[in-house]
Length: 232
Length: 254
Image: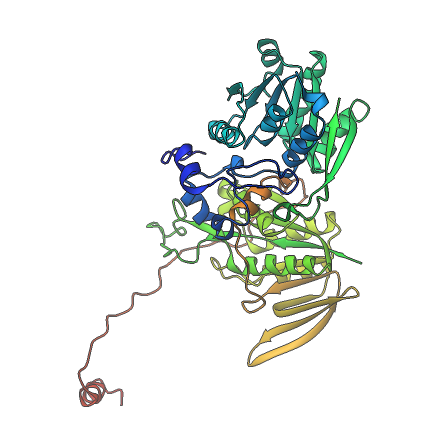
């Protein structure tokens, strides 16, 4: 639900000043996101959404999976250089930005929330990179079409499997990508739906290439200790 | 050995709302009225989280019975620190006539299914003020109960509970599994902030029906009529003590 009112640009400029070293795991990035050093972090939920004028600002956070994905991309530039990358559910854009910094030729940022694309464009500027294309098309529902229409050779997915329905769609997306010979990088902190749906189906087809500790105090959640990077 | 806690959360009309009886006296107006978590349940959730922070509890499961909007109440419980949620969906007429015995049977069924060691509930809900559910859950499960808790200590599968009673307090010890209900002074609940609510949207919420749990929710009592409390008569001002005394004498009160 997006309540009409303040534009996302206005909110970003008025309420979310750029944070240098916004995330401990990827200190290279400057991002306009909410962190525990921001006053909005410390007030009741209802007051915060009234100020932001939005009920679900997913793009105002850097979720653990995406922290790990951005780290892996920056640490493995040779896998990214020269590639055409699609970041699905880009949120604040950290992984897409990391891909661009790592030398990807072409980066498409996709999110069904148009505010996320505005945030991504803004955050890309903060890090002196340009994302090549923005798309709000819900390509999880028709992955083949999206893969036919865009020349992509690497699909990156950060922390998307947070409920069963989304995890099932991500599972189909990974299978479709595989059929189109598109390489997949996925990062997840061990969410229940990822393990029970995606891993359950693809345990022989995906391998874990890396694991990072969750060191950002803002995201230390009871059941998550590490972020795992998986690839097809 | 860490325990598993079930915490019950009821979606009730917000404490700050002025409740109005429907014109046909069949109930109170709920449409377009702000609802939130029953305040005593907030205290129960807070206590569960503190037990988890002390490593006494290993998992907290929040349960709510009612329409889809109960999921918002469950999200709040998840945001505060519950690990997962179970929504027992009950709609329409079934929800309007839902009574404490049915809720107790549902909670007892979930407690058995999830191998729960401790059921933590608010002592009562601020809408119906029934103060029955905790006691009946304990009865249905044949578990000990410690209701109106103002302090809870859990050690070696036993709970030492200070209870609010007439004229003071008493401390009792019960063996787990048990039912504890929270009184007002048990703790001061924290509030949910934006990141915690967003994080909670990524926590698992299972949906089931009374049928899935093998529970019959048919009401056993019939509500005949709802009435507003009598309107207060307006007061008057007096300018002196003498005037007050003469007025009281006039009315034959002194």
